[in-house]
Each structure stands twice: as C-alpha cells, then as structure tokens.
Length: 296
Image (cartoon, rainbow, N blue to C red):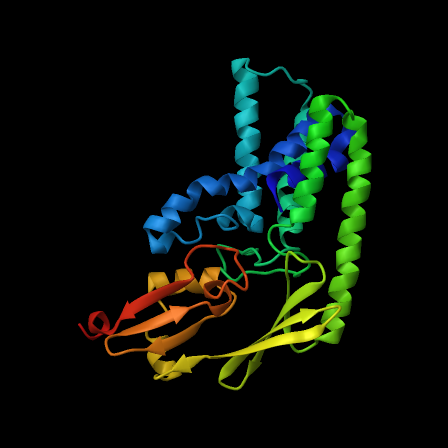
C-alpha cells in the first residue's frame, strides 16, 4: 500500500488518543517506506538486495527497530527544544508503544498485498503475503488522495477520517471475501490479484513446467501459457549458482523463475514480469550467468 493510505490508517486508529499520540502513530506507520531511498544500494550491489522497497524495513524486526530509532529522534528533538511535548513518563511510554504499533500496522497491511514482504528478516529473506491486493492498490491510493484533497481544501476536517476508514474497511472486507472465494475455487494454484478487480493470474506447477492462466469472473480462464522450468540443463547445474548474489536478488524479486542454458551462459528470468503480465516490481526481472566465470 502507498504511504498516504498507511498514514490515514494510523490516523483512523489513533485519532481517539489525541493529536500528539496520533502523530506518533503516523510517524511509525510511514517510517518503513523510507526504504525507497535505499534502492540505489540494491541496484549497485546485488548483495544488498534486501535494501530495497518492501525489504528490510518491512520485516517485523526491521520495522520495530526503525520505530525505536524514530522515537529516539523525537526524544532528542524534545531535549533540544525543537518540539514541545508533555514531559510525563506515561506519555512517552505510550508514545513508544504507539509508534511501534504504527510500524507493525504498516507491516500488517503490506502483508495483504503481493509480492509480499520478508516478515522474518534477518532470519529469512522469504517473502510472505496473504495475497489479497496487487501491489500497490490503485483504488486505495485514489481514495486516500481524494481525502487528502478534501482536507487541504477544507471540504472535510480531520473528523472525516471516519468516513475514510469506513470506505477503507469496506474495501478490505470486500477483497477478503473475493480472496476467500478465489482461494476456494483454485485450491492448488497461486492466485495473484491484478489491478482489474475482476481478474486474477493463476500459477500452477505441472511437472517440469509452470502453467500460468488469466482468469476473469465474467469469462473464466481465457488464456493459458506454459513455461519450462529448466531448458538445456539440469537442476543440479543451476543449483551451483544458488549463492550467487545476482541469483539471490532475482529470486527475491520474482514470482517464480525459469532458466535456459546457452553456449556460454545461463539466462534466468521471471516470465510474469518479462512478458508484462505483471509489472510490479519493475526491477531485476532477468540476468545472465556466465558459465566461463563458474569454470574459472
């Protein structure tokens, strides 16, 4: 989800606590998206692939540590006189809890969307997702942008956050119902939502291939494609590259990968993103591994 929707979700939940503590919660819930500034690290250095949007700051440990850092920065600003907040220890204890809760709220909401987040990094870089939304949700971004415009122009005050929250909760509930129906209907397949709310992408392993289908509520399955997992090589040969930093990076960003051996290289790619069936995330969708380098 986008940062604006995250901020409004924090405001919606923390508004009854008062503006100051609601501010703590908003700060906590937008902090994980500061990782957009880390992308140059993963782009330049494959070993730093976790330092990208939806990476380390979206894990439970990462979000928690980031919220503590944010809290300490606020405390230092209070000490230096840049902000004036209550001095009671109870306020600051509650503030720490609220800012940490905001960061974990961000992680929980992003868990609903593809392609997932590494919840338990640094213990594992495996991504987890419930798979309810595509990433990001254009509808929620639009609703949040309209509400922000209403706030700026004075059409709606902060109290209007409850109207936003009603729309948000209803939309999440509707998509959870859709997700449940899709998961029941396609039990043995990965069901990936798209920006079109009536369409899904279905992915199923079938022996040595991946079968990818487009599904529409109105048309049913209307397109099917098969991708060979390995072409011109065996699984053991590809496994030799498992610890290659670029291989780890493409596996992290991909929905699934296929590999094809040529004369002097192995091409590894994510067919869903290469073909444009899915556009997000846009980076690191293919690579070429030189066999000569491996022999040397």
